[in-house]
Length: 172
Image (cartoon, rainbow, N blue to C red; front, side, top):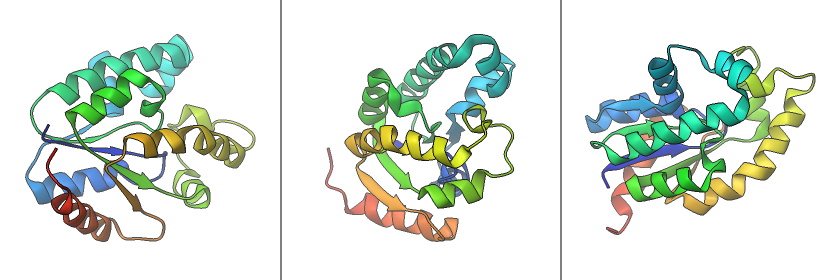
């Protein structure tokens, strides 16, 4: 149970903060979406187009189970990873879970120009993000050991808070 798992919505900073946190803690860093792309040889939008969200979620579940059971690492997950009970269980059982919370306004600002997010390729991305948060926020909170606000905060400051708060947690 040595993993540190970063969960939260798209645009919360999971990948950026995960890379910095892994360097600080001298642990390997993995991004579950990047791992899916490496293992399949296809990017996420292509997987969504060809296999649909269901096919992508199947691949995501296998990757999360594998990474959660392996060597100690910092793991950044996709925003929807918490939708499946099996993923929530793998993440929770595999280490400490840090929910990086970002407001919908902050998510919009951070994802506005990103064309690699299939769920946002709609007429009203803000509406999509609000709907996703309504569903996912309770699931993030359900498995989180720590909740950290990331709005308007430099990533290095967030990393320092994560480290301090992890150290303050009682052992499991």
